[in-house]
Image (cartoon, rainbow, N blue to C red; front, side):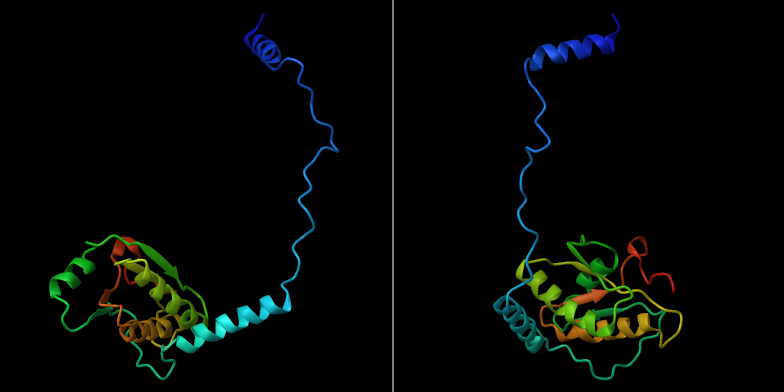
Length: 174
């Protein structure tokens, strides 16, 4: 007797009198999801307005950064050694936010809670992926310039630098 047939017989001996369930014996997952109620929609709208009202990030004019220059910021009182360690990848990335190809208003809306939550969870090193364009006024470079402005507006942000080349660095122009 060949091995597959022997295995099949052994299996049948183990399961004994087991019979397959009829096709009608299926779990009922219930009705499909209902649309949110008016009160749920109102609570969502209030929460979005509340977050938006607290979002202090300025969308006023920003000086555009040259696309090939590395970004670096250090709040007063932060030692240069911290920035050097950050620049050389001495801190592991604990969370990431991807903003590639998103509208500026959406990036502003996403960045605010990301930084707040990172701070609330005691994350010390996060990465924000934003892209970089070839031209000074490319959408990616405009976002990059706003990020430099916005990050310095957070008291929670002590320092930032452009990522290591192995983690995207100044990125590929797109």
